[in-house]
Image (cartoon, rainbow, N blue to C red; front, side, top):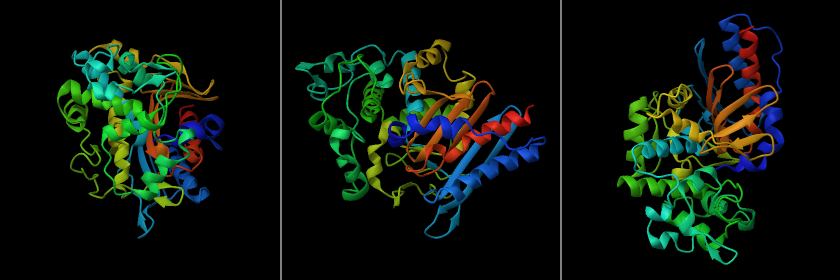
Length: 385
């Protein structure tokens, strides 16, 4: 899901994320860590609907992780830094990375029609636009760039919230299959433009990429993830929820509770609708393992693979650009890249400071990051003066 990336980010992100200044000089590592914890605590204290927040900050000269609030407000269970959580759409960057790895192996051609991999009944009628069926011209690159023109199952305005009601209210125990997600869009939400003629964020794009991966490898998506990404990077506490056995966090606890407004949807099987569009449960440590390896370009055999993902297209005016499954956020004080997800999950890298930032607020209806990352980055800048 990606609710706030469309509805709030363009208006609030640059203010909330990058204009906060550090109030006082930070001279010691202890001061720096205190500033990180204070920023986390403030998010929970100042946002009534944010029940817990997790943050990890990693750089050659910095290693810190922390938590604030209650992982389970219903029983008063305090959040801890090692709690797991839903990555939501921040996992799109991992899926895109996995796809580029398969491209290096010759298993997925980014510019070949997805009709090469998917059954005719999936392709037929998938992209009917102005009397023409573009389904046979859609490529994996179109999907990962969000230039397919396909509508979004989660938050298309024409849907008037119907899909969201199904997931959060009416069918909370439903286990969604990928083809059902594609059919939901195909049968009810017409495309917005011809492939390559615009950019429109759509979860079903990445559902289709997941289906291409399964068809190209002959394996379930979660097995491909583990074999080519999670195991090599030591991401032992990350798993594709509802599709494989859960892997508890270091503490042995389940995921910290996540909310959409007042709705606690932590236990809803209907979140299986995220699948390849998100779908991973992870920890800040595992996210950071991925982001550090990615930032240092240690994942791909061919350096040009990462370069291909940095093919930026303007997305939210001057505020944000989108590559292949990766977002660049152009702040007034800092520019970062990575990906965001519903619940304010984030997995970001600040290249100018060589800093990885991972975490979540576990609340979709909070302001973006609750002003968390601005103070954190400003504190780092002050510390390094």
